[in-house]
Amino acid sequence: MIARIRPSTVLGTMAMLAVTAAVLLPLAIIVLTAFKPVSEVNAFPPTLLPQDWTLDNLRRIVDELPFARLVLNSFLFAGGVTMFALVFDSLAAYALARIDFTGRRTLLIAIIATLMIPFQATLVPVYQLVSDLGWVNTFAGLIAPRAADAFGIFFLRQFFLALPRDLDNAARIDGASEFRIFRSIVLPNAVPALLTLAIFTFVNNWNDLLWPLIFTTEREMGTITSGLTLLTGPGGIVPYGVMMAGALVAILPLVIAFLLVQRRFIESIATTGIK
Amino acid sequence: MSLTAPRRRYRPPAPLGGRRVAPGGRRGGRRGATALAFLAPALLILTVFVAWPMLSALRTSFTDASGFGEAEWVGFDNYVQVFTDPDLFDAVRNTLWYTVLFTPTAVIAALVLALVLNSPALPFRGFFRTALFVPFVVSLAVAAYAWTYLIDPQVGLLNHWLGGVGLQLGNVLEDPQLAMPAVALVAVWKNFGFYLVIFLAGLQDIPGSLYEAAKVDGAGPWRRFTNVTLPLLSNTLAFVLVFAMIAALQAFDQIYVMTGGGPYGNTQTIVMEIYESGFRKLELGFASALSYVLLIATLLLSVLQFVFFGRREKDTQ
Image 1 (cartoon, helix red, strand yellow):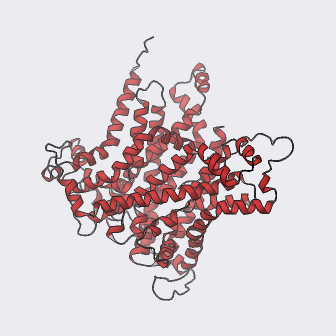
Image 2 (image 1 turned 135 degrees about the vertical axis):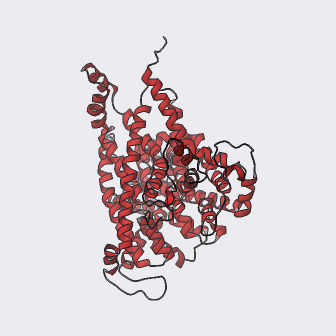
Image 3 (image 1 turned 135 degrees about the horizontal axis):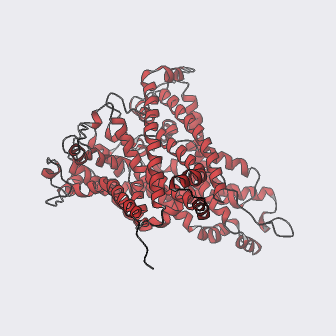
């Protein structure tokens, strides 16, 4: 049977194509401008596509910034937070979901309460604390305050609650310890939830501007996201082409990673209201 | 940052013969010790880096601490300052204006696009969904550079195109009226795809039979939207609205990059002001008091969100 194509569908498709093109325009501009020579970047009237493709901007960004270092810092910072948070959050979530102990409910409510505190509201005292510990400009300072997070605990607890308990009970009868049940039964069954949380944590930290801006004062300790702002700081008038080359490198790893896992990622976000 | 309420799930009744009993954990004390071992690392982090700083900030907000020398107890002076200082009044007002610009725009755009995407006749739905979601994984600060270039008064492509259709915007980021809508629009661009995905999930939970029944009763597309979709989506809608408002209260990244709070302080939001006073001018007491204003506003919205999330969960079961 041949489906009849209705005019409203054609209109809807065209509208969606237009919206999608508009939404992708800033990303297209980043990619295309990164490869444009200066003359074209500043040409009037401005153009979308480069006439001559050049690698000059990418070369210059390496000169302007300790570039490899900033990218490495981003990986270590976002990766470190993700790794610690995943371990600590899943341990805590296991206790809250699977072990009956006195005060469990109170503790859960307390954790949910910390979830409502925006990190911007505690920046000043957290900075003082990190500074007293001598951790400014260190990975410890960047990572430790985020090594566990109420949202992750809560998110994983919900997932652990939903896993069937038959296997745990069988393992318990066989004399397995709680830690063994956690490691060998619950964690392997929670891989989708752990993966979603991992991607989410990594993306949020990689993209964060305020956090690295505050906890690193040395150029060499910044992330790629915060490092780029040095280019535009006072006196740092930098050609758009160079800026876009930096932007390209900053967003490329995440966009590629996202496109690889997009289906599962979007679906799990839709059902959990994660942020 | 989000809030989700506990789901109530159906649990099968305990097996005959009593409660689930762990052979190693028969006594409450022992089980408590095991639980504590699992919880310790996370609790340590949350206590040291969230709970304690909160209380310490509360104390600091009653002092004139600057990071140097002894802090003097100044009572409610900082709060009085928060509510009388014209700059701060402006920061709160700017944040509210930003919230008003951002929230409805992002939520309505997301809802409309979700409705279109939810139509089974539309081709390439998966592609559209993914493409519209991409901005959400891009750093707002980095995207802000692209937008700055696009609306540059001299060499900006978007400015040029808009000029071509008779819309002369001039130097948007230097314009006291246009700077705030511009930075709000960049946040809309970044976040609407996320709200869209939540709406899509909500829409897919509405049973198709309801639409069939409405059609049989002679309801047109608009009636079906107002009488079936909206009522059944209302909790999701409320949830997303509050969610967007909380995000708006925390506006910082693109403003820092695009305007630095200018022109004439017109885009100086609460978090921008916390950054300036806390980390540039080192007026820590002042920054802490302002932090509490942000905190209380967020808490109020979070409680609302909690309620709506609970209702949304019930809807979807």
